[in-house]
Length: 152
Image (cartoon, rainbow, N blue to C red; front, side, top):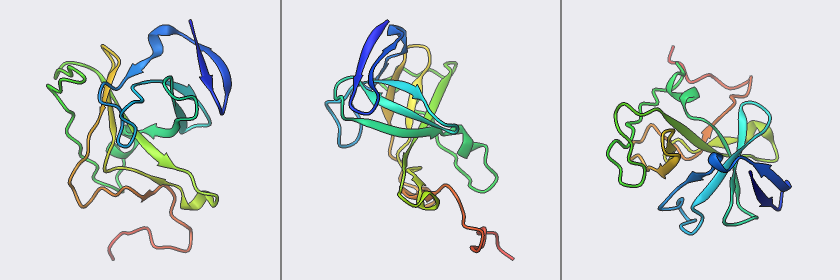
């Protein structure tokens, strides 16, 4: 077990093998390389930095978008990436960073730059997709008085 220091959650004990390493860091946070996932209210989790007690991201499972009929979220895993050593037969996770707003209906997800984590070695990388279908501010909830985006 290791102790994770966090400004949000205080000191927490987590298994040492739960560390996820991002060798290149994340966009805007190149020196934050080691993180742990902390459970939160479904469907959300926290990605807490071990390198910066003040840095934590709200994330959701990116496979929720891959499997969603509302959006065609087809992202190619970074096979062969030197940061993750991801092979085609490896299991991997996709994490999408969420921006929580004071009005929860305005909460958005960054589909343009998901995080891929190789389950085998717990190494990850953030990939930016140059695809106009993927927004950095994809709404997680559609207000009831708004159309669902379906064509009539």
